Image 1 (cartoon, rainbow, N blue to C red):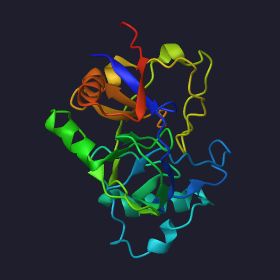
Image 2: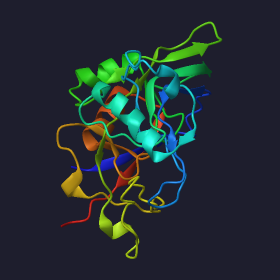
Image 3: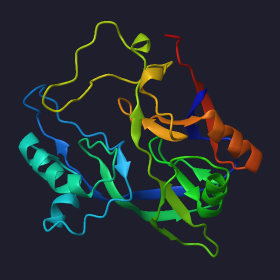
Image 4: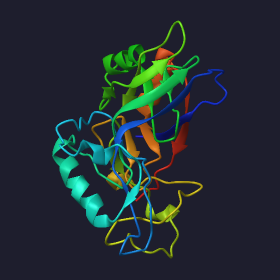
Length: 240
């Protein structure tokens, strides 16, 4: 099975623009006691999560960095509400996208490398074509135009990893406290076949969450159905 990275199609001619953030957010980590780093990536997003049952909801409304003890406390409040397969990290976005949108959009929309939106009709076509693991979540986007599409955010789980061959030979292990990897995405990433899911056609990398990956089945379906707005870049898998 061949795999591809999904990226925005900058040459499509679509003028769509999204200025939004997720309704709730986990804080970043302030001065991790293990590696000394203050960080939060926000590349792992779970738009289906509803935090309204949490009593201290205000703790999730402002992006900021906190000591690791506070971050871990908030993670424990969120964890029971997560779908199966979710992995939390500092800065993770939760709940629907809230903000403004304007312009003409393609069938698929990638406002940032780690988000993938889809028009409802396109999602229904992909699901009818038998593609697996596609979960569209409502957004709270405001359109200031006469006609506006219904854009859903795809909830994309972190399920695969890069192959060690594309990473620096001399590298430090993840931080034992905050689990930060501390590596930049390789210029030519490779996939580790042993880590890739075989039951879904769309996922993101666990170690580089800004990379959204799809199967050849997904690419074929988009081309057959005439769905536009994104491009597909091959991601090789070295032989074992």
